[in-house]
Every structure is written in structure tokens, then in C-alpha cells.
Length: 189
Image (tube, rainbow, N blue to C red; front, side, top):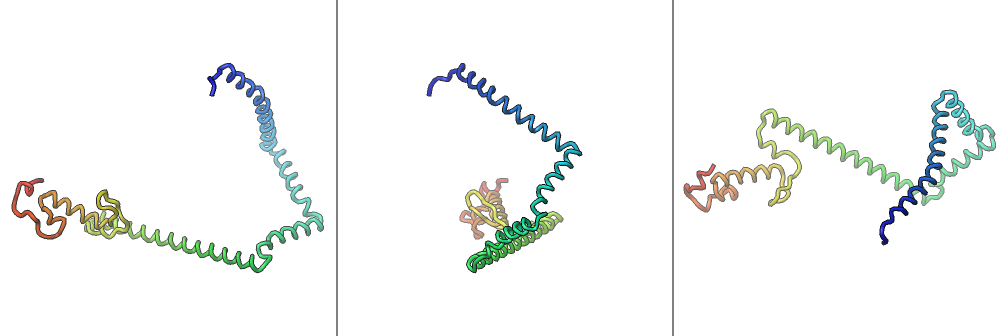
């Protein structure tokens, strides 16, 4: 790599401007003329008539119309030309149809699950028991424990709360605490 030469960069920019400017002006003039033709109602209807005439012209002569229809029919029949191709096409079409049905069923199951979840959340919001949270589907990822259900997360939270409030290991194991008695830890808030 050489040192950046500002005069050479300036020369390249000027050369690019000299070449690109006329091309850009030509493009802008062409776009302007097309825009003026399309925005004028008279010219727009004339362009539409001309385009429709060009599309309809091959279909006015019976020989050309027959050739066009034959060509289109041949292209449409091509996937069904041999028994192997027909079997492949039917197999692919049935596979796509079954996949679409499964996706539709999955969508309906997802909607039903969201409705059930919303019902549980509404019941809790209307003063339902907090244990209804345990019935919510899905899992949460806890830092040390990993993936657990919402009900398990609530139980872990309650056990940790009891542990920190002086319940000892009994809160975690469900049994009796290893250290019995009222110590200073039992009086912590």
C-alpha cells in the first residue's frame, strides 16, 4: 500500500463526475419524460390501449392463438408427462398438504394454550389463589437450578424465603432442621 495521494484522489473524483454526470442527467431526463407520459390522463390511456393491443394481437389470429394455447398446455402438462413424474408430483403435493395441516393444527393448539394461560392469569388477577400460577404451562430458566416449571420455581422461592427467615435446612429438605433451637439466625427479618 502506498501513501494516499490527495491530488490523485481529486483527479479520480473529477473524472468520475465528468463521466457519471452526463449519464445521470440522461437517466433523470428519461425518468421525467416517462413520468410526464404516465401522469397525463390522455397519454396514460393511450399507453394502456397500445399495451393492450400488443398483448391482444397474437390472439386475434387463429393459428397463433392455437400455437400459444398448445405451448401453454404442453408446459402445464410437463410435470405429469410420465408415470414417475406424476407419482413424484402427487407425493410432493400430498406431503405439502399434510405439512400444512400439521402446521394449522399446531397453530390451533398454540392458540388454545394461550387462551388457557390467559384464563389462569385472569383468575389470579380476580383474586384467585396464587397456587394457580403453578398451573401455567412453560418453564423458566433459573441461574443455579436450570429449567423448572413455574410451580417448581414458586416452591423454590418459598423454600429460600423460609431458609433466609430462619427455617434452616428444613425449608429446603421438607424435614427437620439439622440445627435446632432459637439462634440469632431465627430472629433475622
